[in-house]
Length: 124
Image (cartoon, rainbow, N blue to C red):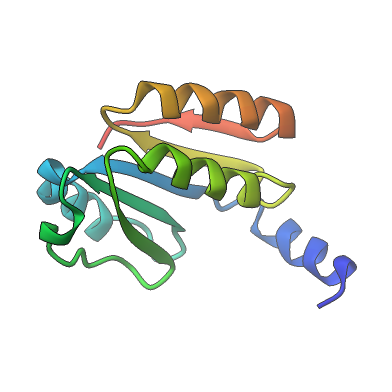
C-alpha cells in the first residue's frame, strides 16, 4: 500500500479515536463491561497485566480490538512498543485508560506530545 493511500485512510479515521486500555487482571470484569458498551466503530488495543499471565482468562473484545496479556514487569515495554508504532502519525486522538501504571501513563504523555497526538485519559 502506498504512503499516499495510507494517509488518505488515516484522514478518514481522524474523527474516530483509538482506545488504549492498560488494566490489571483483577479488574477484568470492569474491563469486560466497558468493552461491551463501546461504539461499533471503536478500535484499539487492550493490555492486561498480571503476576502470572497464564492464569488470566480469555477476554472477549470487539472485533476491532486486539487483546494481549503480559506480566506486570513487561507491560510498560509492550505499551511503549505499541506507542512507537501507533503514534507515528496514525490516529489524531487517543483515549487511554491506564490503571495502576503511572510510569506508563507519563511516558505515553511524553510520546504523544512529541508526535502531536491529542491524548485524553479516562477511567474504566
